[in-house]
Length: 307
Ligand SMILES: Nc1ncnc2c1ncn2[C@@H]1O[C@H](COP(=O)(O)OP(=O)(O)O)[C@@H](O)[C@H]1O
Ligand SMILES: N[C@@H](CCOP(=O)(O)O)C(=O)O
Image 1 (cartoon, rainbow, N blue to C red):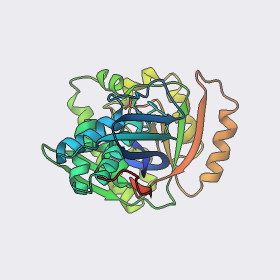
Image 2 (image 1 turned 180 degrees about the horizontal axis):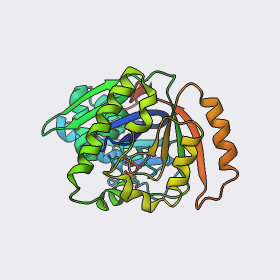
Image 3 (image 1 turned 45 degrees about the vertical axis):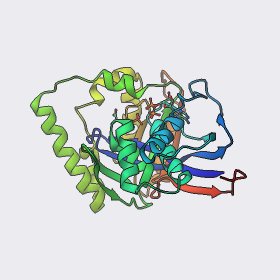
Image 4 (image 1 turned 30 degrees about the vertical axis):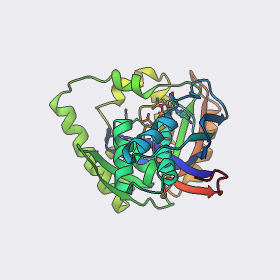
């Protein structure tokens, strides 16, 4: 049995739609084992949206590796231990895809390079900003090309924290992508380009005072916030509590805020306000650090199956 640990991820990071994302210390564990025959899939906690057949996202990701290398197990047992909330904008799908590809590559003897795995995952997900940090960790600037992903990984210092606000309702990424406009005004494109560049410079040089300006967006949040009634209240709450920027996590509905070393004061301020304001949904709140490792082998136990 091979066990792989794969992190959650928060994509876009404000202005960097489809090209910036960070891995977070919140994990799924994917356990895989070759068996004599058949496909057995279990998950905990179980969730009706998690398929237990060949439609399962982890299995589909594993199959892309088997198809790529031309090797197939006789049968497969997959056990999923899920900490990443599903369909909340925290990269649960990317964790399945990158974790499944990473696990399958281990199962077939490591035939794919890291670059090939990164590309396979981004191609399957459709954008590289979740799957790449889920695979390699860190805060990643990434662009999906025809046959590869061009990326830079930045190792995030522990002084930068990520406050995550998670509501009790789901918003599928597919739906949240379909509502985006096909065309935007030139000035909105220019607005985002500048802030994405400013974000990359501010985060890598530690100029966190620039982050509130650098995390503003006109490409996706103005459209998606209409689906999240408490969006403005939560963003303003975080900024007033001292966050260095607050914005939609991925396609939402979760909201994420950047917090520096004064995070304990921030946390207390947020908890006080969350308990007192009227909101349309119940919101969980946690402060996470960035994960700088990505998908890793959690454990390997020798399998009983002899070829
Ligand atoms: N642990 C999991 N096991 C199997 N499938 C999963 C798991 N987590 C997510 N998925 C699949 O991914 C879908 C959610 O993907 P998506 O809408 O992109 O949400 P997110 O913002 O969490 O990535 C779920 O409906 C399910 O099909
Ligand atoms: N760039 C994507 C990111 C989706 O992230 P997820 O965690 O919500 O799947 C988008 O904004 O659609």
